[in-house]
Length: 133
Image (cartoon, rainbow, N blue to C red; front, side, top):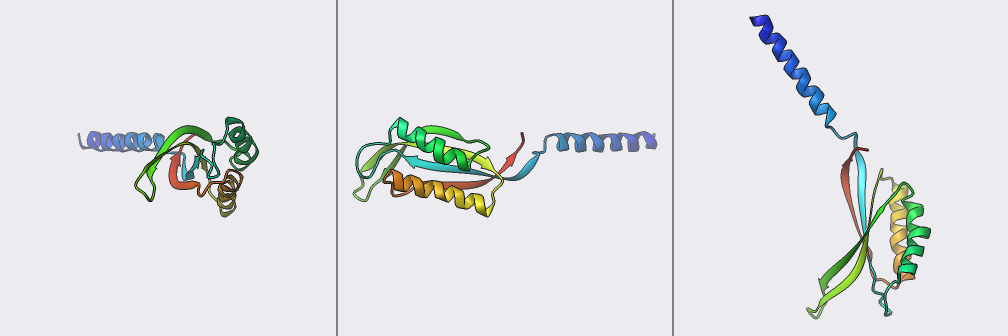
């Protein structure tokens, strides 16, 4: 009877260990980066679909060569007068193994966008991500 209990305990431990390992993410050394691009130009007008596509194809894809996802969104905030400002925006999300070189390239996306489209800022959010493919 004692041997059965020990065998049952061993089998239970192995089963739980296998189950936990099976559901464990493959790698948690990834960073999810989100970039928020306002579409209203400070000089007036909006970034056109053609301008956005050209920027995405010539700048963003080269940095996030393993892939990214773009979401069309609408942002809101209060200006210094307390007015609600609404702006069409795009969020680009990518998951990569972050390096100092990649981080600098991501910042170059932001700087180019601000320069090309007369923007005062491009928000960047980085989060550690547990990723499994």
